[in-house]
Amino acid sequence: MKRICKKAGIDKEITIHGLRHTHAVMMLESGASMKEVQEKLGHASIDVTSDIYAHITEVIEARSIDKFSSYMEYTKKN
Image (cartoon, rainbow, N blue to C red):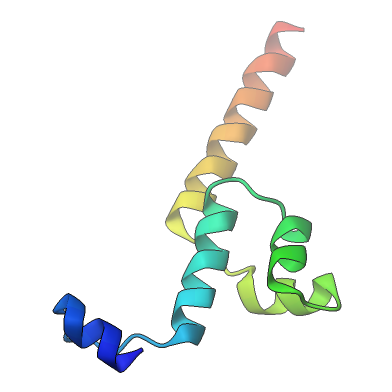
């Protein structure tokens, strides 16, 4: 991995584990369910995935607020 980063001109140390973590967080931010992330990563239990990756990112938090706001608007109309 160090050799690949060096060839790409990346000075910062990037690990395979770091890429895995980033991929999981990006999946969650894009709207994938925790179950989908669990299956993709091969965790035996969704609890393991949730314990590691359920921290709230700004993107997930903003989407959550938008969904709730849309829900409240919908309930006002109906």
